Length: 96
Image (cartoon, rainbow, N blue to C red; front, side, top):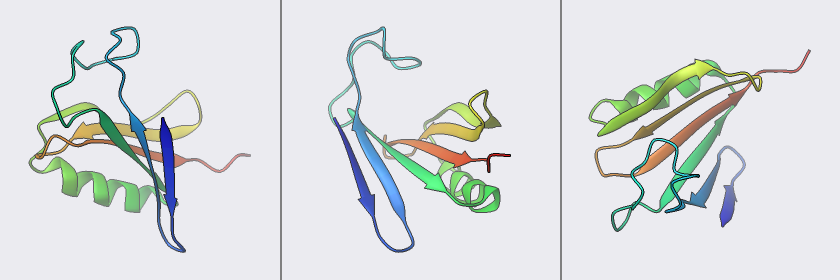
């Protein structure tokens, strides 16, 4: 399931996490209680994306994907913060 939360200045998405290993990517096959949701943030600038990523990465439990350019035309990264919350960071580069 997915949900999107929007305000005038902010938007984030939430999605559940599957226990199916085929969809788990870098996660163990079974998710501990409380870790079955990931939050996705979309940014309008690389600078703001980097700032927020760096703040949450300070005491992160894991950084399975540092911020990096992707084949789909975005700058993307993932981390699990010190509380066990999984975060996805996305910045879509302007299309040419």
